[in-house]
Image (cartoon, rainbow, N blue to C red):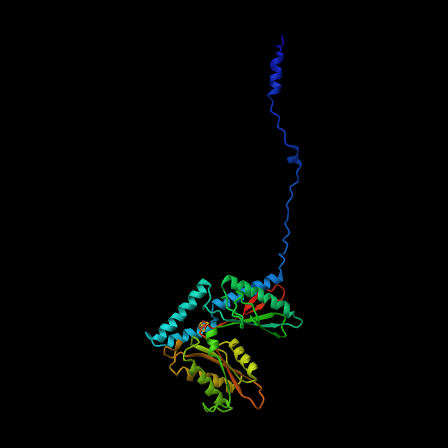
Amino acid sequence: MTKEIPAKKAVKKVATKKVISRPAKKATAKKTTTVKKSVPKKINTKTQTIESILELIRRTSTEVPDDVAKTLMKARSQEAQNTTASYAMGIIKDNIDLAKFKSQPLCQDTGTVIFFVYHPPGFFQNNFKELIKKAVVKATEKGYLRQNSVHSLTGANAGTNLGEGHPSIHFYEHNKKDVEIKLVLKGGGCENVSTQYSLPDTALGAGRDLAGVRKVVIDAVYKAQGKGCGPGALGVCIGGDRADSAYNAKKQLLRKLDDKNSIPDLAKLEEDIVKTCNELGIGPMGFGGKTTLLSCKMTHANRVPASFFVSISYMCWAFRRQGVVLDAKKNTIKNWLY
Ligand code: SF4
């Protein structure tokens, strides 16, 4: 006899049977990998130029170049210990270290801002001038430059370091594809002891020759007596008219302190002047000692027979000079010049 399964029980058995169903989408979805294309970041060359110039200003204002630091430290080691001179040189060293560490100006007088721009042919000087001005304003806002430029007739300070003739910008065309920018921040105290002589100078017994030049340059250092925040560094131009002579003297400050003049007579005279001035006993800040002058760099320019000017540009120990080469396409800083 066959045993019948009751109807209810049979239904229950069917209902408890597990049904494994896979979601249709999941089963059919294809595995795809998205490859993100890296889009090169578009560089705004104008903004980048301003940023590069801003960094040039920051570094010029807060760090002395290596050649200057090396010369100063060598001079410091030559001063007798426990003298006012060695104390003064120690303060200069501390000042340099602290300014670099804190990225703050080496001196409260951030000076006249002087740019020398070397550019390839077909360069737009006026456009570049505007970018330099924008960088100068930004550097002033950030405190890399003090609000240091005043109107010469009214004394008004725009607070931007912009004004008639400031910053001072000089352009030169060169045969390279890169733009090079050199910057000098020229302090007021040392500018005040910069000077110009007209030879012959009967009071000094200085004639129109290199012996006469030597006399007036040493006279200028002697008269400064440490004013202009010595130890100083000189740029000298023999000849030229009054204006060009002074300008060329200042341009000598672009030379590295350890270079050698390619004109043997001038090379000899440069060394002789440094040695002689350091025997005057004026010393750093005029406190006495062996370090009166760090360097003397000389050049010459043609003159008319009626004139013989000797111009002397005196730079203080806070010798702020830097330079950069800009990348030809991006205007980023490619390398530093000092
Ligand atoms: S001469 Fe130089 S160190 Fe002296 S106050 Fe001026 S910028 Fe500063």
